[in-house]
Image: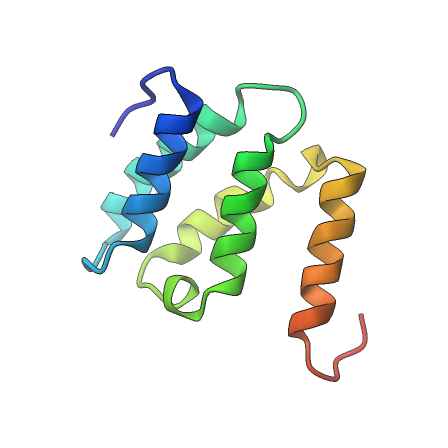
Length: 104
């Protein structure tokens, strides 16, 4: 999978591949990571489309538990410094909503 130049199409491809029911291995996730990286580096701040993918991965048990997703999550962690203030707030609110009694 390669970045084709249209962010909306690339995000849809990435989201479709991530949420597909087919079992993915580390090599397959490496391809998705390259696509994600191409999308995320399209601007200085993290694009909202990439932020939404981060939220999807962290909030979906099905996706978060896929074999090999850990390499994708590691890639996502490199973008944390590029979050806008609004994205940071939304991420914290999402984490608070999913902690069930853990103090953040």
